[in-house]
Image 1 (cartoon, helix red, strand yellow):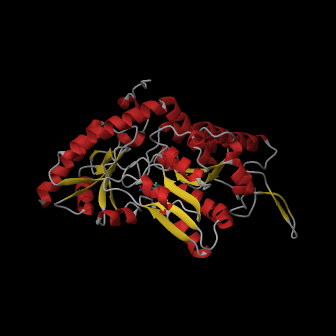
Image 2 (image 1 turned 60 degrees about the vertical axis):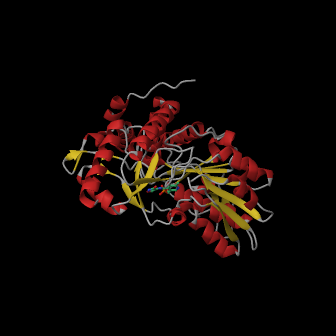
Image 3 (image 1 turned 90 degrees about the vertical axis):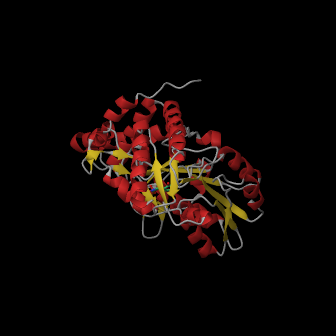
Length: 409
Ligand code: 7TS
């Protein structure tokens, strides 16, 4: 089925920041993998909540609190549908991907992983999907195992399979790598892990802005993503967990909202998902995430995926023509990320010169230092694309890189 095409110029009008200047030049924003820009609909939803419907949620008997609660809980249903989850009680609101992974490591991981056990991750993780597992392994006397990647940035599936051993208690892997753009065959990897009785957490931070995700089709046990990469506000994220796991898991944090009753002798915990939502959440942030989901659903996830893919191919071709440029991460299955090095300039110098042209790219290790170590480099420059990116942005990048060569080559 061919997807409807995105009308990019119309889409761009939805994002006020794209109309602004950077260093006196039209902004060319190529850092959406770090955080995406926000459409007016998201900004309006948050302003509207604060202007007309704001109160603390789940507590008040009065009308304003009921409205605020309804707006908050409506987002839970939007997320459920967005991820294809079976029930809203499988959707936990957290601060972001990082907190979602820490929640699973602290609660599920602590209960499941013991001395001599293993947690399996991949060589292409963001630090957020390394450090919580490392902390867990240190605490429990367990071992962190790392599935290797090929030179092109693909996971070596046979090696992954071999590392799934009798001591493996948990697998955590990225759906899409932030540093390389590799899209992992998650459904297949989950199937292989489940065949050995091992549950899987998927870090979906870089996947949800670019493709439809169906957690029941993937059959993953946990799926984490951040609102801010999905055109929603920062400070909010989602942990999807299968109800059977969430029900069995001990709470992550204690406090208000996560209890049914408290006495000094005994506390009875609330039902899921509230058991994992201690304290007053980012109410407007969750409402903003709901508006972001409405926005991408209205454009169509298939149309977004087709646009991102087409632009990635265009950008890959254009950058391949730049003298002295090497792309880092050339897996056959890739999404929206172009990491590269130049033979004549350090990535930070590339970023600084591009900035003078109004072009925003990310430079550094992208919180994925083991990926850099794998390729024997300390940093890359990274251009990342989103639904509002266009060929002109790529052309501006190529012209900017010619300036970098003029200065340094
Ligand atoms: N996992 C992946 C794959 C990511 O790309 C990121 C953020 C995170 C986890 C953490 O998300 P957070 O919202 O909890 O911070 N990635 C990036 C990036 O590539 N540049 O800046 C942040």
